[in-house]
Image 1 (cartoon, rainbow, N blue to C red):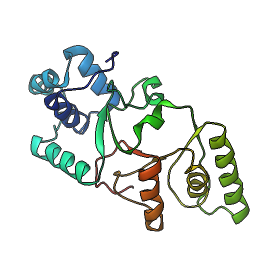
Image 2: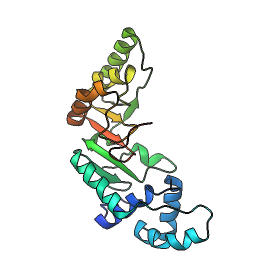
Image 3: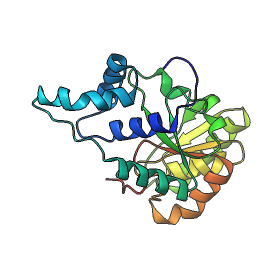
Image 4: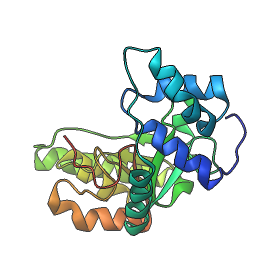
Length: 206
């Protein structure tokens, strides 16, 4: 999709089912959409396609996709598809951008210039202070800071940029906080910044 638009609920559900299917990653997803035009048509074509393939596609059942939508809403988040108004600008520049992301917080931050700060989980106190100060100064200069909400440098970077704009990129579901001691920070970022994940809500990071 080149134009910014809002999907119908049926198409959104179909895209969710398709990207959560076995053997379907972002590259395959976009190849299917290019061929069939939309996810609803691609799903209808899958049975014929899989009969010709040695790698059958295990499509996510509709009830499981609806359950993910319910869990996402319960977590205070929402799904944003590629091409929709609040989809992260930076992700659109990838060769195969994530078809759908889960977002909690302020998606308007995704339109601003962003710098990632990540580092060691067992960083020294001096290293953490340095990361916090850099994040604070970059934030004061108008940058949004993205990090992974892990221990150490990530936590320091988020804390330093909370007042100016910070994005937490989750390895698991958007509602799964790791490490557990960052639960309060997770909620602060949801209130003042943004949290984003490609993974299904409720999925534990591996």
